Image (cartoon, rainbow, N blue to C red; front, side, top):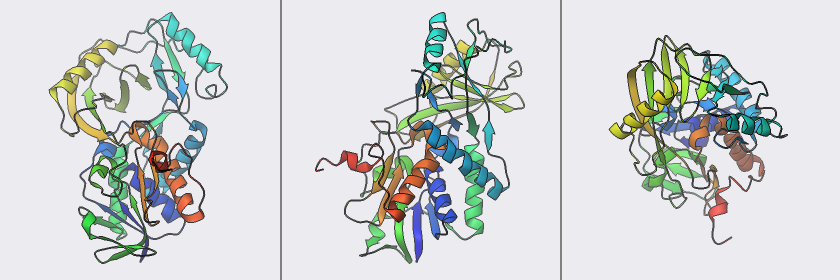
Length: 348
């Protein structure tokens, strides 16, 4: 019998796997490679909602947990995946500058918003009003992380590559069984695949499709991430990741001409040089209507749990949400009401 059977090996599944292993629990991970939102994610972590200059909830706590998580993971995998890099918010007016400095005076935002206006001129980017610098930011190479972590799981006989058949899950009194596997707990970390899950498909997961590019642009010399209506993230060798679009109706992971056109238009609003599209990819983010994660336990069985709905902030939220769920299961520590799936229970 294993302590945890984890369904899904995206950012949520990896985060829970790691906290379980760190606490000397046994795990088995199952994935059929059908969900790709973590693989194609921008991977940015940013404690500020730049559209409104407001703080992401519990940002300090989540960053602390995240930094420790990725430091330990890099040591374990013997590879760098976490890159600390400033995010510069390009200003389009004096009014935006003033709004930035007003926000930076707020106690909760002061640690994250620099009060120094950045006036550096970057090649091929017009910025007459300069930039504001967001602190404690960067990105994780999610594609490399998922690849390396899967290799680690396979090497240690902790991974099964197959589709999960919900009809074969048997609920025992104190555990669950699946085929020849017995587990004290099962964690569903399936991303948008949750819609096929009979235990949790009543939850309001409303996937949001995002499309991104890798572009080649030799005339851009960025050493920071620039954020406007899209982000431009330098990857080295004149390559940049650019994204992302938001589509609330299309639930496929197929790149579209509409998404391509929208991204090209937005890129041209920022840069004034030619670029080549090297790669165009898409994925469906597991987003929730109230923009909060889905964490908790199936009300009819204490061994069945969910970790989902990380949305666009999976890198920053994953480790903290996994820690919260693990401590809730193992130590009965109550979940924050804003993330607990019981908030959708109409009978409460």
